Length: 321
Image 1 (cartoon, rainbow, N blue to C red):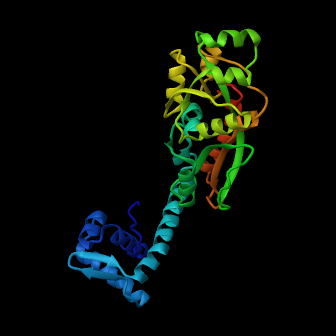
Image 2 (spheres, rainbow, N blue to C red):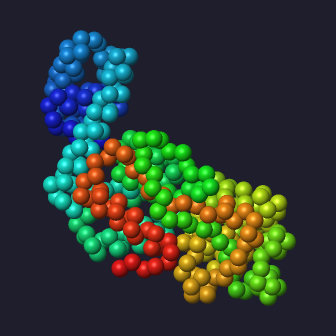
Image 3 (cartoon, one colour):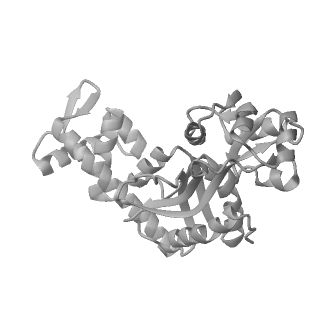
């Protein structure tokens, strides 16, 4: 949490830091104050509310039950104040400032880097901080106001149920496609027939994501729907690792079309249509998430509108310049 220097708010910040560090001297060091000043504000807060908020055990200080109740509101108050400061700074500077984006693995790896390059040419004074994280953490941090925007991949046939406080805007779809190296010998007969049957799929050696990944869960449900068992050579933790294994000539894979676009265009990898049955399970939405109450400053509004315009073109393979 950033340092709060406003008079009344400083008392709440001290309360939050006491809960974190349990020591008034350490809190004084963090805030650049003297220990007597911190103690004064602690007593002042107790006087204002008329109840004990702190308990002292030697050098250690903890919150009373009343202090813990106030802590919930103090954290919220400080979060809102910090967000207000940051948003108004964005407003003062027009299209300048900082924005925090959380993205799930596929959009973070294959979509955001290209968008950031595009955005940087347009607005070099804007700093975009991005983090790769699982969707539940993106939702949590958007609700806590520690992220400004989220970009996630989710099932199109059963959209993620997100908190009503968040706005969810699907911007494009991402398909999972079968890819293989041209040298993979088991594909020769299949290529000649120009089709991928269930029987052929069960004979292909696959390199797949690890079981914990959302992509693997899509693939498992799809294979179950088709009534087939995939022959898995080995599992790898990321789409990029799976792709590099297939590029090296080891097995076939089912990957995001976004992840293999360049390799398919260059001929480094090949693809064949999958059986029509169950293919809806291999299509997912790329969606934008943000808090409904987040003030849409010029910077926030620019980034939101830019993503809503740019991402669909990118998903369709169009170059935006």
